Amino acid sequence: MSKELGKVLLFLRKRQNMTQKSIADKLKIDRSSYSNYERGVTEPDSKSLKKLADMLGVSVDYILTGESDERKVADTKPAEFRRENQVGLLAKDELEFLLLYRLLGSEDREKIQKAMEDILEKD
Image 1 (cartoon, rainbow, N blue to C red):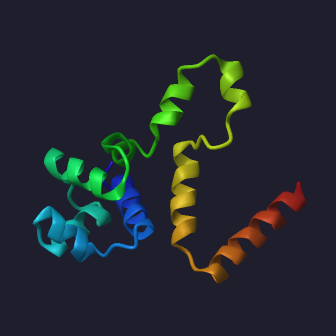
Image 2: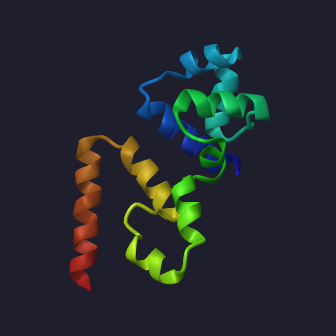
Image 3: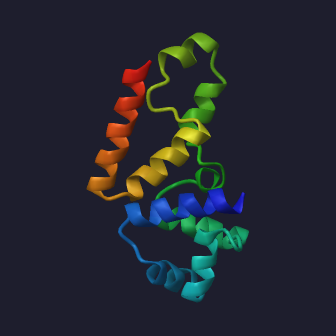
């Protein structure tokens, strides 16, 4: 779980244009301790998790699972509802891909898009 949690934390921090140091300062921990969270070496305690969620504008559940509350609610609906409303709902592998994609520069994003188009053309 630590590696997934770390990827989510990295994505959310970058989305907020925050540095590891700024987050660590707000948590009152060393920057290296926060870096360990992002690298999956250690995990934040429950108090730090709550502070992180507040700082990053998401729920604790989102940080831990990578799923929004919207997805959980939709998953409890009948199958017909889920099929009609799948846009915006991401599976874990889709979320991981998106998180990694958003960390890439524009040149690398173009390469990924081209590779995907090439794969789709083969089918």
